[in-house]
Length: 354
Ligand code: ACO
Image 1 (cartoon, protein in one colour):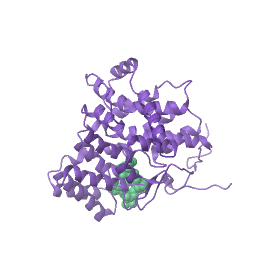
Image 2 (cartoon, rainbow, N blue to C red):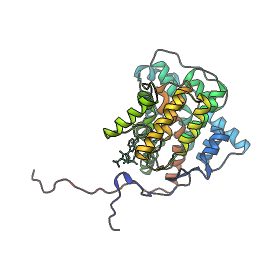
Image 3 (cartoon, helix red, strand yellow):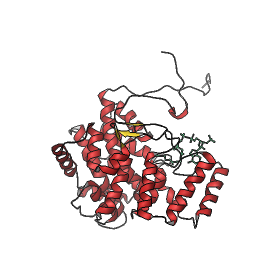
Image 4 (cartoon, rainbow, N blue to C red):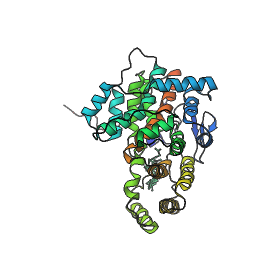
């Protein structure tokens, strides 16, 4: 076969098939054929996780069995808590990546192992945060998956806020061949175990051009006294040729449907407040100046802030949702595997004498 030169960053290149999700530049996002926005509005996290992992919505008994399976993974051993206490890692993505990389995996069914690991993410993050700051881990509560997550991250049992969080978690769950998922598929294609694949995915999600973006928004946003200051910030960044975090996307060139949904929810939470006004002014300015839409992370950071969630958890929370997409992609990659190994165009020297 003749050599093909792919565009930088593989932009616009279709590298494989997937039946898990589809996105397009106009703002379509389907999970297994359903609009992700509808699922966020009407379904529970457990239903959508089942759908993503198994390809269909669960029956009542399938849902019960799935929830029981997730629950069987709850709980962090004393040994792991000791490791967390020794690590004292203050960056929760580093902590999560390290802890997942140590996960024992031999002699376990791979599908069970992936769900078990996925169900531990919220507690791993919560314990890592608390133990590294001299606080005791929280005892689990009964409730939906989102209620449990909300409690683990805030210490508050608040079903209403947990439901708001659940909507965002559903939208964070899956996004076809995004960078972390593609990295996971590369690792899976070598027939490496799920622990290694999840570790790869976590390491990739951490970067500020991907999942790490949501942890950078408040940093600049918090400083704005009013709309005018925010506009000056946008203009200055653009003049300097620098990026405004939370804007732009490889696929969505006109709108990110997740961002628009979270913005609507933000209005529900905060009304016509200063935060909302400033956020919308920044969005409008970015569109006027560069025709670049807000991505989900821009509004998600403000949304999580209003829900009382600490900034340290923003990217790990993204991971705790996306991990169910990773489970599905690991399985899909192995169901029709070919080693992912592209070629490179060599541009270095040749013929040097040693
Ligand atoms: N702020 C200002 N300018 C931007 C931004 C931004 N956030 N994003 C893209 N641009 C500009 C680039 O400077 C470039 O301009 P030019 O053509 O004048 O040089 C043009 O838009 C194309 O940008 P690329 O970075 O080449 O687009 P790409 O598709 O490779 O990048 C990416 C997508 C990485 C998300 C980019 O938009 C970005 O860096 N955004 C900020 C980080 C961010 O918010 N990441 C989260 C993504 S969503 C997610 O992972 C859930």
